[in-house]
Amino acid sequence: MNYQEIIDQQRHFFNTNATKDISFRIKELKRLKDILKKNEALLYDSIYKDFKKSEFETYVTELSIIYHEIDLALVKVKKWAKKKRASTGLANLPGKSYIIPEPYGTILVIGAWNYPYQLSLCPAIAAIAAGCTVVLKPSEVPSHTAETMAKLINQNFDPSFFKVVEGGVKETTEILNVEFDKIFFTGSVPVGKIIYQAAAKHLTPVTLELGGKSPAIITKDVNIDMTAKRLIWAKFLNAGQTCIAPDYVLVESSIKDKLLSAMKEQIEKSDYNVDNDNYTQIINEKNFDRLNDMIDPNKVYTGGNGNKEERVIPPTVMKDVEFSDKVMQDEIFGPILPVITFNTIEEAIEKVKNLSKPLSCYVFTKNSTVKKKVLNEISFGGGAINDAMMHFTEQTLPFGGVGNSGIGNYHGKYGFETFSHYKSVLQKSFWIEPNFKYSPYSTKKLNFLKRFIGL
Ligand code: NAD
Image (cartoon, rainbow, N blue to C red; front, side):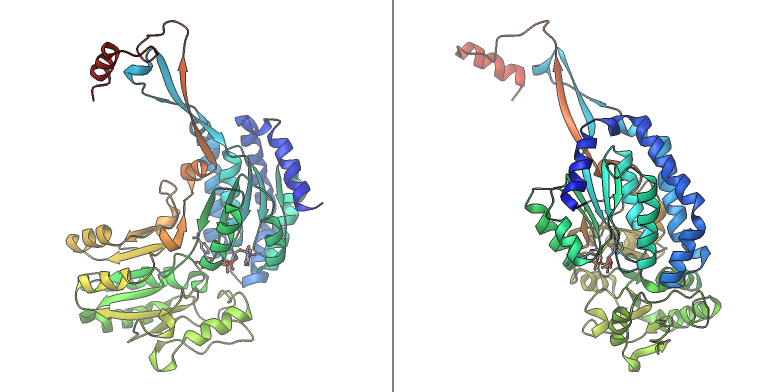
């Protein structure tokens, strides 16, 4: 079946209005959770084959997030889908106004490779909750997870409602020729631009979840050990292959040495080392070479020296880094943490603002003026104060970028909204129809209207 036939089938199914029934959405979400629960062993195994990742990390960073998203939708979808009352102005009385959340229709979700399950399935869950049909194109890079997802979804769902198609650049380019009602893309900035251009041909709305260089700004008054502990976890989880990992550290120069040594201690205490069989691998050789190339051996504080055969790079902290260094030219997306110093918060903010708007920004400080300044002056997708990455786990917060780091957002209710059109309706009765807006016009009518509208 070609892509046009798949989407024609989905459009036909959508037009039967079956997905508008909330009980249908609930049934399908429960089916998805059930399939995932029953096949957890397969999910763990495929992630291990692609990344050597432990069950613990797979549960925390993939499965628990998917289950949460399904559970929240199951509890809230009725409320989210309800029509909402809006106030009605004098000119339209007697009448009432309301807003109806309406599913966009047929959705294309394109996933990234770094958390292959949750980055593909969470948007699909939101689309299903909103009453859409879904074509999901996971990243082809982690081949075992892509294959597992295709098998589990395609064996258990009606393809006219939810279908996984596998493939890389060639296949995605072909899919993008077909007209969807919305495209949800997670991936890199350059490919995000390709998606946006392809969507423009059909005026298809998009959500783009992209990347960038997310800073962690650290002032001299912090609890250094706790800061180091939170930073090291956030940076080296998944071997740094996380879109919201702190990309680089900007530290107040007076505590640079203490922070470096605290970070080294945290790395040594952790399981993040190449001798651990569950230390996450770099996804492929191409990325291994790209990362290796970013490491300047003269600036390595700890780490360096990866093993190409095993595709592992130890947690690497680089010191005395400057913005002109290679490691600062692009998003790192791997286990390398450059540390740059600053003397005033104004200087740090200016340095961050010289780069594209980041997906995330973290500030570690006890100083409320610094906190306010960072929040007020730096534009970023989302972030945390005195922590890193954990904002992602809050389903009450919309997740997404701004500027180069993305367009739109999702998670929880925001995911539902992303796949819904909010249809506005004014409802009148036949009870009465004042004459003042109708011709023939007169000065008297105009004066009345001016008083009535109050302008
Ligand atoms: P990528 O852009 O290379 O690939 C993403 C998807 O696009 C894949 O499914 C791939 O098959 C497809 N694709 C690749 N090239 C294409 C082309 N020329 N035409 C059409 N489709 C194409 O990204 P990636 O390497 O999978 O992921 C890494 C990037 O994603 C990083 O920049 C990271 O920050 C970002 N990311 C963002 C988020 C987020 O939530 N904002 C999450 C994870 C990753």
